[in-house]
Length: 274
Image (cartoon, rainbow, N blue to C red; front, side, top):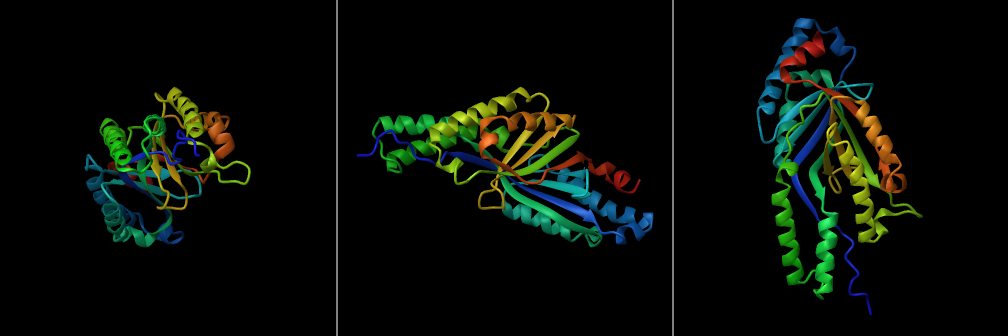
């Protein structure tokens, strides 16, 4: 006979804003050979479009000039649904300046909040009452839990861009190795580790703002992370400390890191041309 308190493995999640990261490089020597007047005309077309996107208070876009060889310009879009993301992607691609730029990276995801603590509490309560997983009663209570959490977390599910100077974006996975496999750990053990992991982030809450997006089934990694801060050393300190945490030390795999500086549309021409 199975243990009646064995809990389902999959944690509940709630989702909000859809997100697209686009990273561009200017084509050289093509871009360098253009006269400054032509460059300014091309950039002003981009500025006008970006300004319109920035003015959308619920689902804006923002531009960042990137540090290092991975790109020259990163544009991050927040939108209501994937069709709106695709529309803005097409609108940007139709701009004349795109003939002088190459898109070298993109990432598609949706703002996600994992509900490990609520999940374990709800699952355990249902199991103790003898409610069968995925029965009508089980499904109704899960729906109530999700709706309650979605209402309480609405500001975090539908964020605006933090007014910080720097951004650090990276994708990540949880390990599925032969020895350590995140997805085979019992949900209560994962909940414990995620709680400890989250406590590190809370100590940095005044210095860095974080937006976590889920991308399982949407892109090549499982999550995307955006960190926003006025001092980029905070990125190094936070991520370095988290390396020693059990969740990261045992189960985390990271993609490439992209760091950029926020550039409001009215300053883009000055930054890119001088």
